[in-house]
Image (cartoon, rainbow, N blue to C red; front, top):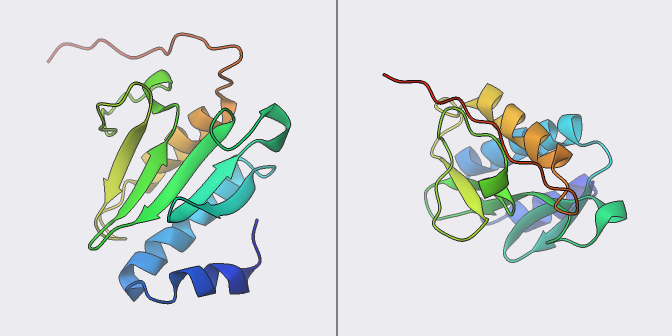
Amino acid sequence: MLPLHEIESFLQHSPAHLQEIVFELRNLIAQAAPDAVEVVRWGGLSYFHEGRGGIVSAGIAQIGIREDHVELAFIHGAFIADPRHLLTGKEKAKRRLRIDSYDSAPWDDCMELIRASAKFDPRHPNIKEESHETA
């Protein structure tokens, strides 16, 4: 993980309530993927498995700060289980979760999505298992 002063510098112009979300997401990623490399890329924080490839091929997650929310994105999100259907996106593989406030964030679900993404290896993809419950 990057040193705290680099993260604080990156976040210096972001609203405090969004910074709080970013720090919590960083904590979840550190717990779920302690070997993840953290870099500032594409206007946000990106996490990947260095031993599996680069920032895209081995991507775990990206944290983006928008004007009024934080976005947790998964470069391979279309291939990970999302039983609560929290992820959105129409790209071929990338999916994202919008977090508007710390209190409304689905932290347990974020952790499960991060864990699933950290386990996913695009070199050996498995078909994701989703529940097909009927309402």
